[in-house]
Amino acid sequence: QVQLVESGGGLVQAGGSLRLSCVASGRPFDRNTMGWFRQAPGKEREFVAAITWTEITEHADSVKGRFTVARDNAKNTVYLQMNSLKPEDTAVYYCAARRSTIVTTMSGAYSYWGQGTQVTVSS
Image 1 (spheres, one colour):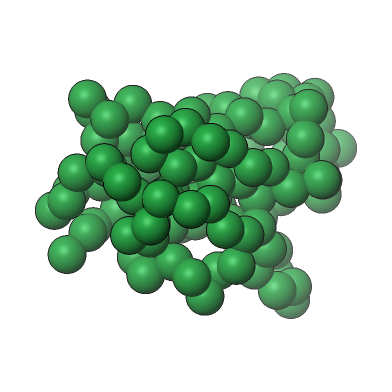
Image 2 (cartoon, helix red, strand yellow; image 1 turned 180 degrees about the vertical axis):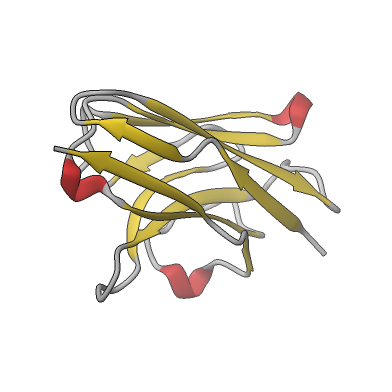
């Protein structure tokens, strides 16, 4: 079993930055892929970024150049550094994990999910 807890969300002004954290317990990060997804009210959950245990990363086109995913296995933690935030980034951000070494953008491929952390970006 893997348990995930997100933190770091909040209210920021457009152009500002936030750093989300996701702490995992129950299993080490080794050989696992961690992902970030987000969901705005009335919208589908969408892929944001993912990172494998070997630190191969992928970022959605909408966040490339602004968001960066990273991990620290010593702390069992994955991060999402969000810079140049826009109002359209407002959503609940979820951390997810899958027992695979291959990165994927498909939410259905992730077996474990956190409860989410709210990110609100004001105009």
